[in-house]
Image (cartoon, rainbow, N blue to C red; front, side, top):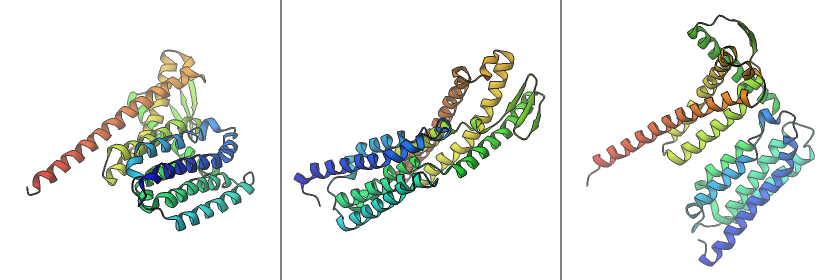
Length: 296
């Protein structure tokens, strides 16, 4: 158990450890952000540590009060993390896995320091905030290409359904859709990767903050996946309809084109908010039923 006069010092050391982990991650993140496809894949990376830090500060009294340090296992984990970091940095520009390994080692370093200073009980309570940092680890490009291509391909099936429902004639050949006045090519850029990552991140956070049952948290995140695909397919159809009937500039790259995506994202957020609200209400009802059944 920590003595009260040591608590400010230990918390300062923990904050310093977090900043050290960010510094360790700086060079790998800088390297990955130099990828010319940054606008498509990696814009979310710098935001994740900020969110994680806010989560840790938000629950600091719960996580870091009156806990027992575990220096030996914590230091051992820290040494392993530094070794992995050195290994990753030596091959930073040689393999696509090096950046991910370097960022993982930075996260492991902070986890080791937390265990060193506060012990496994605090680590367990703060596990989500630390595990959340894993979202900053870039998926290898080869796997990322497959995921984005699959999302775009699934979105095409939604466009098929919607065009059929509204009665617009079209011919589809693979990812190419031949429509009156336009030929649409549903490529990786149509996967809405940035908004997809944002929606998944928000789902993780909302489930953690507002829901208690693990199954409900998983359900919320799982429902975000079909929402992403439906959003992307609907966005393609809406863009075509506006461009064909209102203003063809909506098909040109720029803010006007992206504005439809922003609108669709807001609509999906509202729908996910309603799902979250219903799950939260269900948990409240179940809690009240248990309370009413319990003897006085």
